[in-house]
Amino acid sequence: MPFLMDIWNTIHGIITTSDVITLALMALIALGAGFMMQSMGSIVNTTLVALVAFALAGYVRAVTMGGQNASAFATKDWQAFQGLHMMTLLAYALAFAVVIAVVHAVRGLIGR
Image (tube, rainbow, N blue to C red; front, side):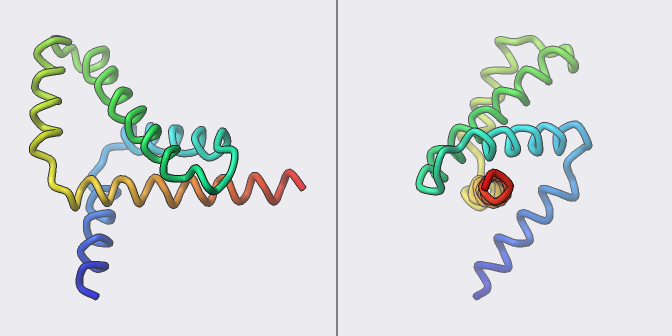
């Protein structure tokens, strides 16, 4: 089971090394996705859409708040995505999926 510890350490690293604005973006996108999800059967699709929304929000944040050149940063960001380790992508996907599923479950319990 060392692969589970690797995934957990990657998730822990993402959460502890991110800044407050990034964590807030992650939370808002995951909460919104959890509230909009229709059924638990669409968790994979919803997680994928949430990850794309998070990437776009990070891009918009870098261009607007960071003062980056939009075209150059898009190229740099795409190259960074291509070099992204699979473990990091899996950790982001699992973190988003868990939060989305919990929010959807709580919404379902409250809505009854």
